[in-house]
Image (cartoon, rainbow over all chains, first blue to last red; front, side, top):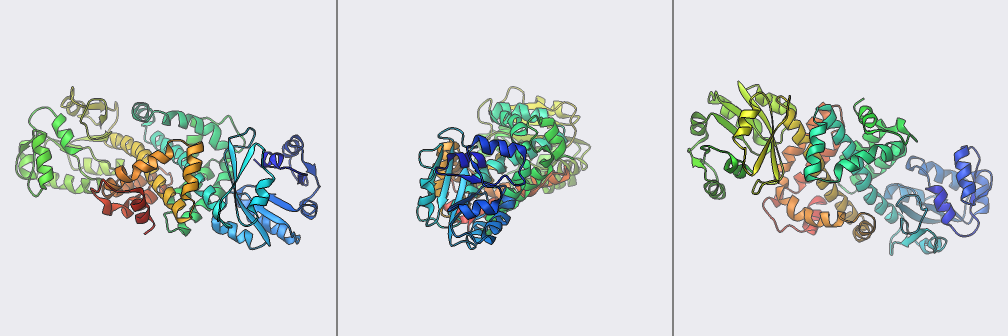
Length: 259
Length: 259
């Protein structure tokens, strides 16, 4: 996702190759980014910094940037809870909250960058006319764009985890085929979604565990039950060994869940 | 559901009016049932007893019937965990496990009665040709039909509870309209499902809390996270005041969830 956000941003876009993998370097080159070396050099030269990383790294990244004395606009576009976003905001004079919804932005109409906070319009302007559609949440402050991202992902990633767990339960109880037959009759589409889950979801599970923790915290802070996403986090934790294994089968996924 | 199961059963079908509401009596009369007075009289005269009740009452009902010395075939067709089904089975010489999937059986093709256990074929024969389709799970024992019901309901009722909680979260965070707009773009159908949830789900919530407890126990016994359905149980608990209130609006439902 990060490389496509960078590619969609107008003006000179810097990145830091220091310590990154060959695959990441290739994606940055393909996105037309300028390598500034390390993060400190990026921050020194930039007037806006956009953080796009797995949610469990969002606070650490913000602290690293704040530690350089960065005086520009910091955008956290990660899948974090509103309170985590506000915690990050407190480290910067200028902060914009962001939430990315959709797949990596490779063609128009698929992916939106929601933005909230006083400087949201200025950040949005950098993406106008690109494949990534910026949307400013009127009247929202730090936490608003994150809240929308949390609510959206709580449904998509919560239901994917639940579906995987339901299939594992049916397998454990010896009724997997009967469940598929009943789904075909009364819930067409669910069996197909399960078939797609292993290949599409399991390889990303390693970076969704932190997101489920952020979502669970968001529910708890709103006085709502956090169990859905505590459980979803556990499902994704059991699947983390499938990192970048797009060939994962349903059978392999269920075996990992029933370890 | 109970009245439609009784109406679909061939032969003389007895029921007990003792202590039941006027509405229940009307449904029994419409279903063509014969009133035997109290449960003890039903049990004395019957060769098969079928229990269809809210899951939190299933064990008590089975114990009441077993306490009469009933020597016929006891069918538990309730939404209970496999281990609850096996606990009930241990009280009877002849036991058939049942799981009902679908709405109350008023027309053909909508509703199935899954059956497992040695005498399942004999029970299935009583429903052949009726609007309720009996399906014997080959090779299954006490617990198999219940496992299928748990797996099926864990998806349908788990996702309904999650959807209600997601909507409540968005409302609490002031992003409800933005979430609906994003759903309309990228997940058509979800907003419509939410609109239907209040009217269809909230009135039944009072009897789904026990079912969520049974499902959570089923997940835990299979070594899977039980948090999805512990949370779903809490959602339905907060909605129990809407018992038999079909006019419940989304706003009323969300207010109850955010009490």
